[in-house]
Image (cartoon, rainbow, N blue to C red; front, side):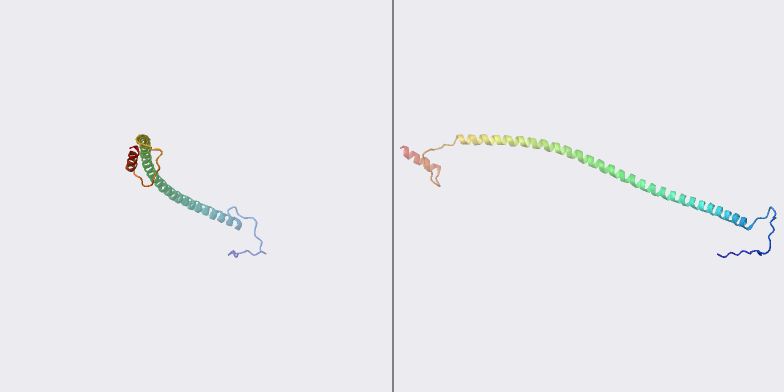
Length: 153
């Protein structure tokens, strides 16, 4: 690295007694370096603070949008839940009604079975069983009765 520095003649002796207001080259470099560093730190801090502020604003803005969206979604879910709750209540009432109807239908079916059984029994009471006559295919009841009359006579 080349520097534009004028070097003193090495053979020439530098006086060691300096005035109090004079500073050496190294001290001057150190002062400049400190000044640059403090200026850079100040600029960097200001830049960092601006970035933080911008980020905080954008994050806050995005969070507000997200919260608003969540609140809207929550309202929709509440409405949907209320609708589902109403549907559930309607379904419960319908189930109770259908259970009652099924119970009534089962009772009616049992009553009809009983009546059919009684009618079958009643119909069998009027049946006449003739024992001792041979059965022929395609016989009719009137023919059997006529034959029986002729047998008695």
